[in-house]
Amino acid sequence: MDSDSKAKRGVARAIAIWLLVFAGGWFVMLTELVGARVLAPYFGNTIYVWGSVIAIFLLALAVGYAIGGRMTQRFYSPLIPTYLAMLAGAYVAVTPFYQDLLCAWLYNTGLHVKWGALFATAILYGLPMALLGGVSPYCIQIATKTQLEVGNRAGALYAISTIGSFIGCLITAFVLIPGLPLAQISIWGGVALAAISIIVALVLRDRIAPAAVLAAVSIAVLMVGVYRLPDQSWRAEKKAYQYPLKQYAMGQVAPERLQQVLKQAQVQAASDAVRYGSQGRKSLLEMETPYHHISVLQEGPMRQLIFGKSGFYQPQTAVDLRNLNFHTAEYTHMCFAGLLFRPAPKRVCVIGIGGAVIPRSLELCAPGVKIDAIDIDPEVIQIAKEYFFWRPSRNVRVFPQDGRSFINWSIVNRQPLYDWIIIDAYNDNYVPFHLTTREFVYIAQRMLAPDGVMAANMYIDDDLYGCEARTFEAVFGNVTALAGHRSGNVILVSQNGRSKPLTMKEAAAAAMKLHLPSKSGIDPRFLVSCLTEEPNWSKNGPTLSDTWAPVENLMK
Image (cartoon, rainbow, N blue to C red):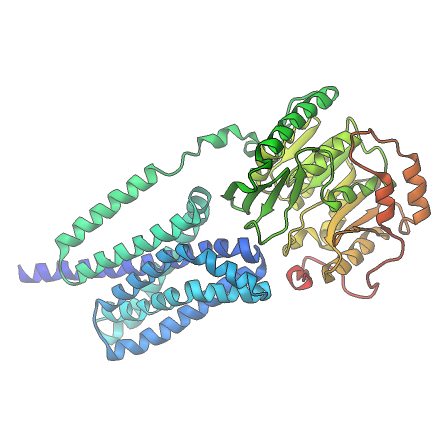
């Protein structure tokens, strides 16, 4: 009977150790993914953030492995790994209470974003990852009875830990981050690891009954939590989710009725301007999506869409609710430079919707134009409709899709060619590198009409601007730049079939021939005034490719 009891205790202890290393692997990946999302609103969703997170996690785990291995020789107790895991969980569980203050402080010190991201990661997650690193050596020691078992036991435990990381990565990325606030994930994840550590500690002390009770309570809490996950049924109403690469019209308004609908939208916008005009700075929306931390901010009559924390990033879209047709930002106005090259476009592709300022103006300045509006984030599409009064006609198709994937799909499916392609995927410190390369510009050129125009929004004070200008020129054989008067934005424009940049004389002549509707919000004279007749970038230098496009290093 004693031998049977001893054997059962041995099995229970083995399972407990497996559970602890599994939970540790799961928790590392949960914290790593959440950590990158926590930093993104302050330091961008860039290679700097991911590099910092991965580097600090690897270094901290390595330090934990080394110190934990030394500790097994001096301080042996089967309970030590449970204490280490418990402390790691508790540490991460309290980070939501100070992480925003820390990131904001580091951001405001003036450090380069890469150093801010590195220091923030080290402070927030360095210690708990080092603690978790110390768990593995102890678990190997506990699970090993003879020297001959070392390799087998170590391999099995590392395999279990890695499986935990695999499952934790998928569940966190596919279920938790899309469904829960980041703070809740960190808090409940830390609490769960601490609870598992206590259960394992009880089992290792042969207190099976209390461990079983705590495990049952934890499972019950987990089941209740899963049952009470936020209801996702509202997604069924967002048809943009349902047709990722099929024609989908945001509205069923006939083009000839568009003016009437826009008047109604303007009345609603003006009402909001009056409503919020005396309330000062007000946050209307703050949410996490799989792609962004999104903020919608109201300040007087101005409404802003910000990808990141408000106050730390420039708005992606700024709209004066008193006049939705007015271009508050110079760059949205300059994106209509295609009028000087290819007036009266019939088909246009816009990659990057934001607050839908560009698609709305397109329908006004080119009545009857057919527009394909592309944005990787379906939530941005809904926000443009709900907060920025986007009321498109049925001539506008929306695709919640990566811009490059969409262009590839268009070529494969022999979609009609575009007169214009407008790329507006620029952020304060982030540009999707795969939308800057020769390979992408080449496939975009294939989707343009013989005299079609491609325009991209850039920032003039970056080395990325010169590299992108040379890339456009390498593919098209020509590139023209329009620079803003009061902003650092610059629009690069290339046209199929043109051998040299547009001259000031040609631009002025083209502007004279334009007869735009009075409510279009586009001033051809402004476009001409932004033209830079002489290239303001170096002709000598590299171009961007899929194998070399270090966009973060090229941006200031």
